[in-house]
Length: 148
Image 1 (cartoon, one colour):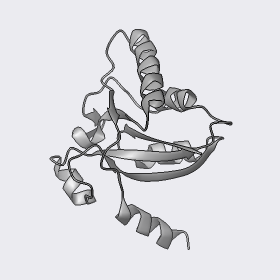
Image 2 (spheres, one colour):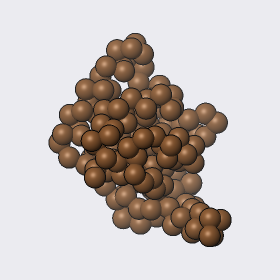
Image 3 (cartoon, rainbow, N blue to C red):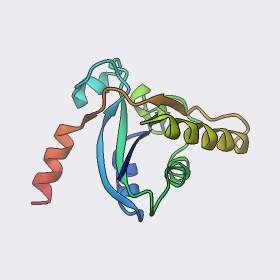
């Protein structure tokens, strides 16, 4: 199993969309890319932690490739919007691909380059090494309470 972490606006809808894709084993929402190893929803909402809202996926690459996940990523949001996914505005809603290794970095750059040509150079998506990922604990707890 492989993992990848994607920022494409508020994590609620993307998580639901990815859950239903063949080959996605697990989804988890959280925050990544900021300066601190742990943050709360309230801290991220202020907009100065550097974290983005993300969906972390565990996937079976025998069923779905990382490139296919990235194709879905670009279809699930508007990558031409900087630091927002309308109506949500702020750096925590940015478009970003967080790579786990050099292979993912290379594939992300290839897919982004192709999509950027299709969209006349308007893509605002960042590609960064994963750092300071933390699970959105309050969401996780509410989900457990709702589904038990």
